[in-house]
Image (cartoon, rainbow, N blue to C red; front, side, top):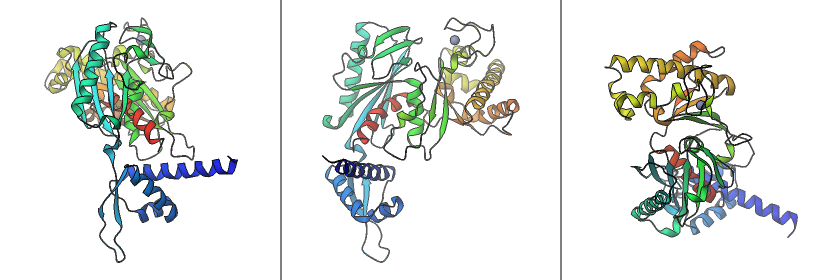
Length: 385
Ligand SMILES: [Zn+2]
């Protein structure tokens, strides 16, 4: 095959992929609109749309109102053409979320199931995953696979969970978790998964840091590269570091010689900013803490101190990364009413910014990590279109 021929095929694939992604982002679009907005000729649009129609990824769902000439057909993405399930493994729970080519959470569940590195746990995980899959009642041939979110450091190629403090495991092969799941499974760190969920629908190219404030503190760093090819995957934009340990913000030292951290060091961010600090006041139920924080003076004092510590951490991240900082994890789900207060505290500390509007609440408050993990399967599929 000549070099020219390969190149033409690549251009054809890139065009088809870009046209699909454009249609995927629109609820309703016409062929002339695709041609004008994407700067692609009508014959190229027609050829590619016909291919996508044949593959069942796009459908004609009616006519646009006439603007004088012939009515244009309404094209819509067939989101249900493929689907994937995300599984979020935490110390005490298993969360699951269904998504399809829309990238939205369509169905979710969360079960109390403390992790133990024993065969019975993996059997139960297999049973629960397959039960969720079958209850969805969608055609199995459209199922792309499971994405698994793990609170730990994962080596590339789905090989090993190098380390997880939360699960108290070291060098466990990822396939331990999927040994009773007879479908493809892709593994992703929990904070990276949540970051991907946040960025998947982000309207513009951007850089962001995700600060995950759950029972442990972690994070993720996202830098959108401009490659000139829109087919690049959201996951390729994660900054992972030399040892895949980037974003471990929980173990930056906040106070030298401070409170003991579960990692064995003193004064880590985790000991001042973990969601447990609030949740342990209300039997592990964080929502109960926030229900009574305005009426309980002790809770209010504790929350006030927490916000002071959090402001220091957020401001340090802003100084290091100069980008938006997303407040995520369990605390992120409750931060919106207190966002202004956090921004004011962070602004006082900052050398450059007159305000801290760069601090954003997370957009995905339910099963963000499960969704992000599932999106790896969705992205892998879309990149083949
Ligand atoms: Zn630590």
